[in-house]
Length: 200
Image (cartoon, rainbow, N blue to C red; front, top):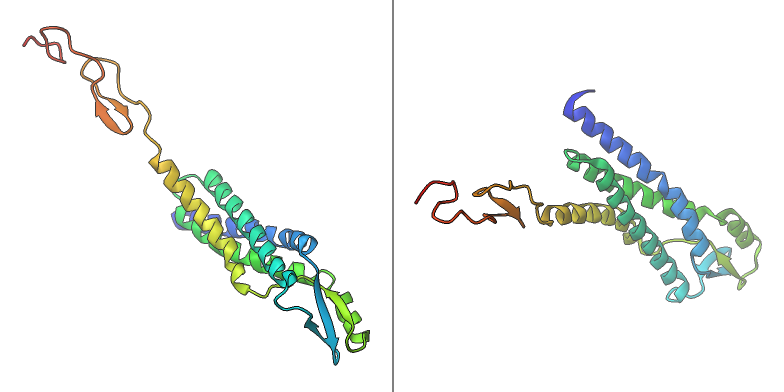
């Protein structure tokens, strides 16, 4: 597919794919830095030993920090690499790719050590306390990655548009110089003449 629609579709696809590939790497990082979560075995099931403790809360918080940090980086990189004329495709790609990356990060991180944990639960007597894999309780943090990506892209867009314009004016008398977006005549007219050199 060619033309603007084809270019937009390619931009969207590439953006989604590149961001989604970061998900598993983020999941491995999350599993590595997540705090220990302790479970107690009751009738062959693993229940949280302390649902309101620092373990489950800290696990969600660290996932959120990773998602926000990578989301901001993705948005900034997309803005720098995207150029103009691709805003809609890039924004949609950031949203879809960020959502996919967040889900992949969650599932990847959760599966680190999951098989061994299930085997330990199956063999443990009631009352045994075990450490389990990272998991999310507040699934709303999955939206942090796409929101941070889109938000940072929009931030850079607004920031660049609000920067003062450079001096693009001429140097001759009567020609306006742009200072902060306004037109000002910065060269005085000769004595007895107007700015175009005509006698007054």
